[in-house]
Amino acid sequence: MLTEKRKFKINLKNLNYVLQHPSILKNILQGKSREEIRANARRLNELQVERGYLQESQKFISSLKKTSPYYTGTNYQPKLNRLCYIEDWDNKEFKNILKELQTTTYDTYINRKEWRIPTKQTILNTNRNSGFIHRKDWEWTLGIIAMKRFNKLNDKCRAIDIGAGREEVLFYLANHLKHVYATDLYDGKEWHNFALSDFPENPKKYAPFPYKEDALTVLRMNGTRLEFPSETFDIAFSFSSIEHFGGENHEGALKSLREMERVLKKDGIAVIATEYIINDKEHPEFFNRKTIYSE
Image (cartoon, rainbow, N blue to C red; front, side):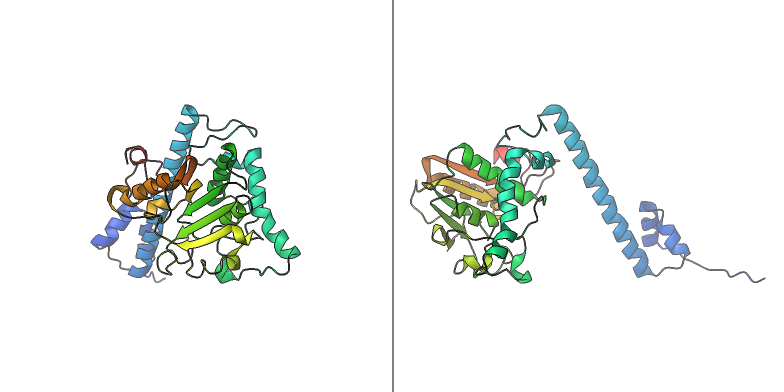
């Protein structure tokens, strides 16, 4: 009986792979190519990083449950200055608003034939199924709750959106406020998938449901230099945009916040959502526990 003998060589690079992931040794013994071994090592590294993120998140959530009112039932009144909790999707107030944002889309397109259904190219985040769980829905819903709570969600109030893109909430608010001004660069360069260059000229093209067209104005404008007089608006809102405004030490975000304060009336409200690193790691754009207060 012949016994086949295979020679294999473990070079320094492969040895490092084996030390990090012992299962790689099996690939070497099987005579896998260098490219296959590297690809498997990359995949294992990615899984290791994902497991680390999951462990940190679970540790943070466990700590949060012990130190704060993490969840208090379906009828609790959500706090406005807070992090996103998955349990918010069980809250009655939250669910009622979310239903308006999510379910009108299909119904109105079916019943209003003059409204064109967006193509796959333009659809992106629109047409969310009822019950869909996404951070954007949470931002919009909590923002609407804030506007209601301060008695600003009515046909007497004007609002400005900074870094607006073409988000669905614009059309919702156009139906509930006197007027909404959506501002963004809309230059067709960075963030072109979310702030399309033709959106200012034709917002209806991207509307997920019918809206008051004369109540929405879209303008090309830098979020750090708002071209409006002081004390113009009842509401200034921005959903996960200010962290991308550039500069050192969140300089762009700070300029934008000062501009929002300037254009708000004395009794106006600012509704702002931004990215927050829950494990306090440093990030060039996103905030953490230190920078969200100090800067």
